[in-house]
Structures are given as C-alpha cells and as structure tokens.
Length: 417
Ligand SMILES: C[S@@+](CC[C@H](N)C(=O)[O-])C[C@H]1O[C@@H](n2cnc3c(N)ncnc32)[C@H](O)[C@@H]1O
Image 1 (cartoon, rainbow, N blue to C red):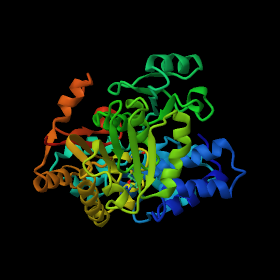
Image 2: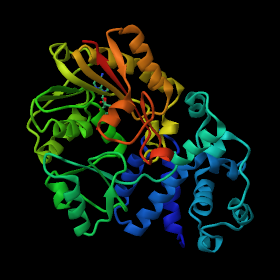
Image 3: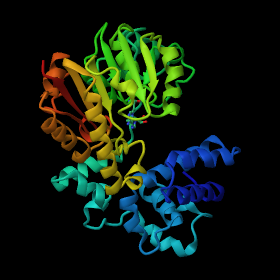
C-alpha cells in the first residue's frame, strides 16, 4: 500500500515515543490519536498496525538497520520487511540515500542469533530456562503472531450454540473455541460494543486460555468463592456464571480503578452474588475475616504478562529481570495469604499470564514446600473430568503456537481434608 509523507511522519513520531518504553504502547497510540483527532481511519490503521508490527519484530528489525537504529529506519524496515510495502510505494517518503539499504532489507539474512530468530530479547530467553533453540524460536514466532478475538458466553443468560447462531445471523463469522466449552472464536475483529448480545450481557470478550483458568477453579452453585486478584473482573464474571449467581463470590483487588471497571460489566452480566471489595494489601483485615471459609480461591496473580506479547509486544522491553524478581516477592506473599482463606478440602488455583518458570512452577513449588497442608491436583485430570481434551500435564500451560491462546499457567492446589 502506498504510504504518504503525512502518514509516515505520524508513524515515525508514534514509534519514537513507543520506543522509549516509559508508557504502554497502546497508551502512546491513544494519546497521539487524541492529539491528532483529524487523522482518518485508513491513516490510523496504517500507523497502528505498522508501529505494533515494529514492536513485535524489533529483535529481527534492529540488526537490519545497521549502525543507524532509529525510529525512522525502523519504520521503513517494518513497512518493507514485515508489511510487504515495495520501494515504489515509498516514493516521496524514502530518501535517495536510503534506497540501496532499503532494497537490501527485504531479503537480508538474519544474524545467527537466537534473539533475532525468535524475536525475544536475551533477558526473556535467559529466564525461559533450559529449552531447545527450535522451541524458543517456535514460541517467539507464536508470540509475534496476531491474537484472535475470543468471546465467553454468559451461561446465566444463554447457551453457546444459541449465541453462535445469533452472532452468525448478525453477519459475524465465528466458531466454537476448541477447548473451552463456553467460548466462541470470531473470524475477524468486528466492533461488538453495540451488539445486542454484548449490551445484554450474554457475551464478554475473553481469551480462551483465560476461560480455562477460571474453569479450573471448579466453582459451583451455592459455594463461597474468592477471586483474590479480580481486577476488572474477567474471571469474576465467569466464576459467577459457573455458580449460577448463587452463593457468595468475593472480588478482591488493591486497585480501586480496576474494580470500578468491573461495575458496568457486572450490571450487564445479571449476576447478583458478587461482593466487590477493595483491599489495602493481601493481609487486609477484610481478607483475614474469611480465613478457612472459602470453598474455592482463585489467585490470578500480578505478573510480567509475557504470555500476552501478541497483544502487548512492548512488555518484553517494559519488564526486566529486576521487575520479575519484584513480582516474585508479591506472588509469593499473595499466594500465602490467599491460601489461608481455603477451607479443609477446598481448592486454590494459582494462575498467571506469564511464560517464566520463576513466576509459575517456582512459586508453586516453594509454596508447596512451605505449606504441607496443600497438595497439587493434576490439571490434566481436572480438564478431562470437564471433558476438555487438553493435556499439558500436572499444570495447565498454554502457548500461542501450540494452543492459539495467550500464554497462561495454572496450578490447582487442594487443602488436605
Ligand atoms: C492479572 S491481573 C487480574 C486480572 C483479572 N483477574 C481478570 O481476569 O480480568 C492481577 C491483579 O492483581 C491485583 N493485585 C496486585 N497486588 C495485589 C494484592 N496484593 N492483593 C490483591 N490483588 C492484587 C492488580 O491490581 C491486578 O488487578
């Protein structure tokens, strides 16, 4: 597609700001579009798609820029190498002095370097632990791909088959998700905000992997369930529907803003069993009051989010070895505190959207070593009980290139009776 000078200038400015990595990339984009409100839909699409493609493939693109790695060169290299733009379409944008370099970019060999080949920076590869190079490359490619748009059907309001028919009748191409029995995968990215099923609370946007984490909690009618890190309530809503809006469901979080975002979603969902509670920290007295009372506790822990690189490619540069170590301390403390709520025989699910053993298995292993009153329930057996044909072993471990979901981890623990 032909790129004009104005589009390119905006793209360069956006990339320049994104590559500072001091704010989330989508916040940079939103602020830029707000400032330049006259930009049309085609311009916005080109700028957003190219800037995000650059962040996805930055490890591959950087070595192609030679000694001048800057937002201009990266924008040009992204357009040509990733976007398939040819040099004629860049007339007026490209300088004569750039022609020879840019002509070489399309077919240039990548350096024999795992970062360039996988698209993952060295610190991430280091923390992934012992892995075959081919596996790191396959994982990196999966994380640089585009995420489909998944929906969860609110079973309180509708059956999945009926939602599928209604969506298809309204011209939205979709199919059931392969693993989650309550998920729908859309073929494109249609706007849903005004769709009657969305407005009426029969569907919510939720990645299939995220649905599986919630389902592992096994919440049932009439139980007392705690969503310890509820945020804006993606999983709270699923748990509430699994409980058929009965019993009691506590949604805890330390972020008032996130809990506020749960409110309109709750109103749409029709749930009446949710008690959304702001806590100061994981040892808040509001938490302690429920000690030993919960049938199920979900800890969807704050994490690096590296499993969501398909949607947030900048996270691999906004997180670091140091930030992961800080998160590890939080994850350990939250899991220990949340575990106190679980009654004898009750279930505790620890989950993250991280791919790093340090945030996943290591946290769970350390917890089990210091909490002999808990035991691990194999996730594969629990999924089989739910007739979900997915076996990743004792832990649920999802990867974009294998399961076409974001990267997720979950461990199911049970307090011994
Ligand atoms: C991965 S997000 C949760 C996403 C949410 N469960 C969902 O499905 O939409 C992690 C959440 O943990 C919260 N959090 C961080 N520290 C916490 C703490 N000490 N106690 C409870 N929640 C905490 C964050 O505010 C954030 O909303």
